[in-house]
Length: 162
Image (cartoon, rainbow, N blue to C red; front, side):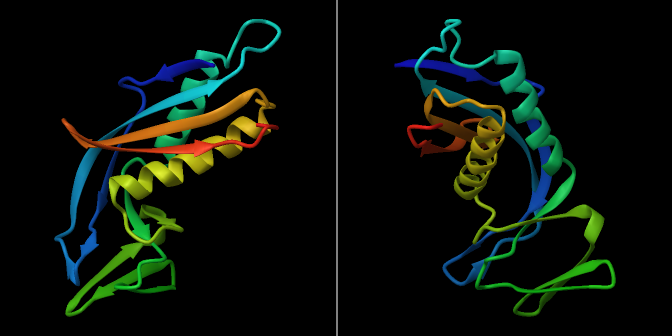
């Protein structure tokens, strides 16, 4: 089994969010997130697992999608979310946020934790790698660091066809 990793300054995004936990909602705040990706699998006939440059481009593009946006967990049962007239309205108890649609990344996750962001990014990365014909990969891991020394990782096992 072979393994490659990418990380670095171009694999970052700044985003606002809040999470819910135990019936509470933390205040709206932001992070300068850092992302790393690891691929595992067998070498191609050309002795590559996957091109580092291409992997870095794919992960950077995913980071760019999230950069300078509000991360909205659309499956969070503690939030009331409405979308109309080009805005999202998010309500938790007596708090109400109205954010322009262009500044929101509506993610199909239940909470905008580093754990769920790593999982979402891993799924998106897997889709992108499959689209590029990477059938030799057995797993990928995405790590999201929300602050120095605080990170979460998610490993996705890929089917035998990549």
